[in-house]
Length: 67
Image (cartoon, rainbow, N blue to C red):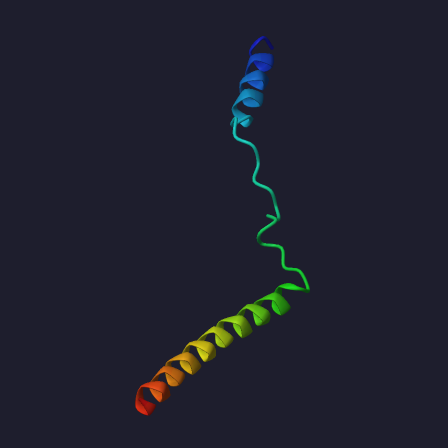
C-alpha cells in the first residue's frame, strides 16, 4: 500500500513533459474567404508589372529606330 501513492506520484510527474501543447489551428493556416481574392489581386499586379516592363522596352526600341 505504501508503494501505490509513490507510483501514482511518479506517473503524474511523468505525464507532465514540460512543453506546452501545440495549438490545433494556427493563425497562418486558417484560410479566409478573402485569401483567394488577395492571391488573384497579387497575380494581376505581377502581370501588370510585366506588361509595363515590356511596353517600356518596346517604347525604347521605337525611339531608337526613329533616331
